[in-house]
Image (cartoon, rainbow, N blue to C red; front, side):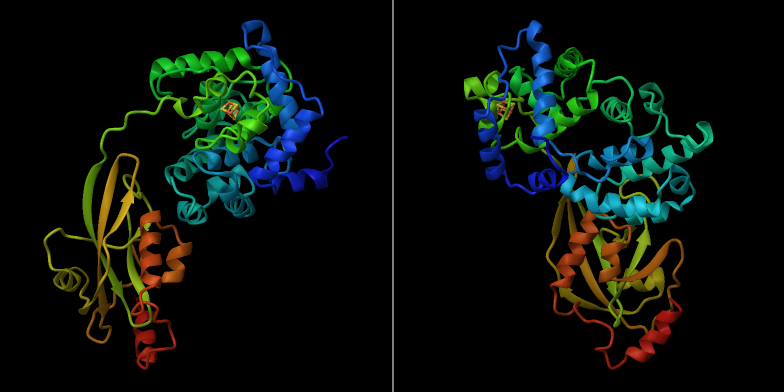
Length: 413
Ligand code: SF4
């Protein structure tokens, strides 16, 4: 029976257990099982993935209804290191604001970062923005679908270029994102860390040799869906997997050993102090980070000199008179290569005695709510959440008897 739109939607909403039961039932109905994966049987691998995708894969994601290369490009970039459910609302907001590559290229970068806020890995947004300008300059505002041209754009690697090209109707190209590496490592019991160049080469060769001549889009979508929903990093749902009878890791009962875990060096530890300068109206001073480097172009609480007294620094740097607030817990934020321990210093600003700090491109005053929607790094959002739970910071406008005075002052900030 063909999958109706309604049935596909229902399928998307299924939890793993329901999915398991559904797939097991499908298996009973006589789905094809794979013979041993020898070279002559490689075609069966692709056929099985395509067949599974058609029945159980995802078909109603917002970017799946078009072959427009801009749409597929934005979605593929957002999906890098981020799960589909998290991406969808960001994708919809992004496309509503920047429906074309020209609209993106013409927008201020601040607006782009603001829409991206909360999705993390902001370098992706900056690359997307630079690439949009490149497309307008060198391709007359038409996003190319040729992988060789896509590879010239900032932020697009081989696998992303292949996915965009294939989804836009080009001849199929092999993909090898994190999920596909895990899947292939398990099915073919490939030992060694996928981050090593030797294993990467081996996986790319395999990915190329498995690629079907036709139905490339269904095939690579199937690989993505299978890797994301069944062949998950922890506790893969092998009983529901169409590859279970030939997957070598499954046959060996060694799913947890593939792919080989990368030996990670101990992460370095770094430390910083941040100034949380709060007005009686509940606004906080933020400064914009330089456009390159850590948190480039994002709004951040000002960093405090490692040894200077926070009250003194506030007065010397901004002319702000303050009194110390409660001590807040140190927060740890982990990046790929290091842990950053952030020691927050909460200070209450006396606006009557203080010089106004005007809002500029470099400084601004935001409420906690605004800090959640502006272009702020994840670490700052964690601090904001910590502040929102703190009774002294939950103060909202309208509660202070001095509000009218401070509102006047803030008008100048
Ligand atoms: S059988 Fe299990 S380990 Fe093998 S590909 Fe399927 S889900 Fe992954």
